[in-house]
Image 1 (cartoon, rainbow, N blue to C red):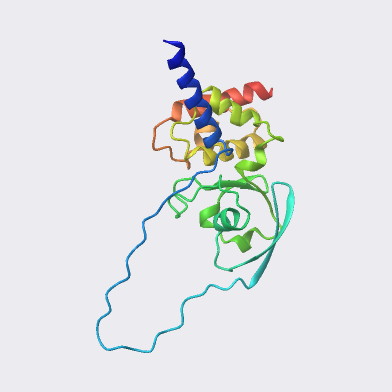
Image 2: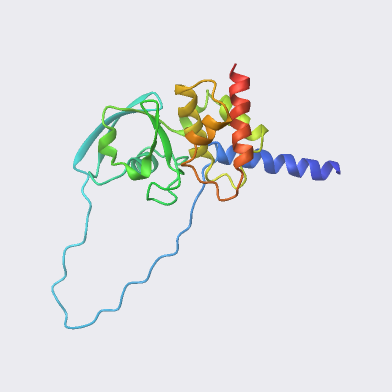
Length: 207
């Protein structure tokens, strides 16, 4: 392999590592939807829907106490992303089915897209950004990069947070423990073997 090819490979690997482990944010562009055609006689216009931020939410996020004014119908994922700019928490299926939005709450993995933010009142929440040690990657994040446990990187924050929750409750899991704990996290790129190897390496490095 030429030096140029090796350099390109490392650059791509570093970029994906940073993107998947929460350092580089990502933007999704969604096409706007045109308004439906009006039919029938003109009617008095209903007032526009204007969600009101009527509730106060107190919780801890990544070790910091937060007091937020929110819409009571907001999910935890929406509050983390839109109020705190913690965009490492991904909203993918928005149905609590893929694990892309996984965060750790009171040491347990939860689907942030499937949980009202108000249900997190008084809780301690950790997101992928909270694993950074200053500007240094956590040992789990490092292991995912070393073992290529990410491909597109979009599911990686949720994968890492599920693994983080597992290691909090079981510091020395075996391969079967990891498979069971992370069974709710979908990787559409099919990087499952590398994801498992990444968690096992993190356990080894931690010990």
